Length: 173
Image (tube, rainbow, N blue to C red):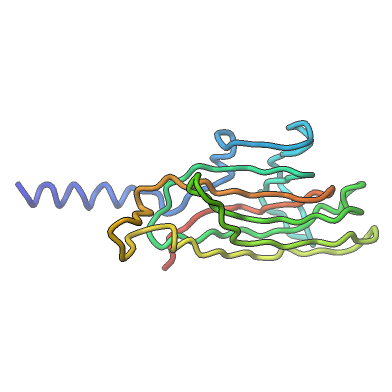
């Protein structure tokens, strides 16, 4: 009987997804912006420096919040770039990532892109953020991050726009 439970447990883990695709979960994420939703958020294939990536475009003072349970040894991976098209390219934009347990917010990443003259060539900048402090088992009687649904926040500050390429949460190897 115990062997049956052990085998069933192994089988359920084998079918668990190896990552959380945040673009796939975009429709269910909470979105807030000073702009109209159609202006503030878009899913598209963005070309930056000749490389095309499936991306999320955010503009103006906006934020997207995903409520997620993190896998053990979680790592957030994405790439960022400013949107230099139109008037958005002449404005500064800051992209930042934070996490919250709905009681406190902790900033994890921030990068500011200064205004650039027309024709400036950009490239994707890879971003890797360890979320291991918020996932898996921790040496504590009271802190149980594996039981917590975390709010993962992607925010855009400034008048410009930025791209988040293929944002996903993976288990570190």
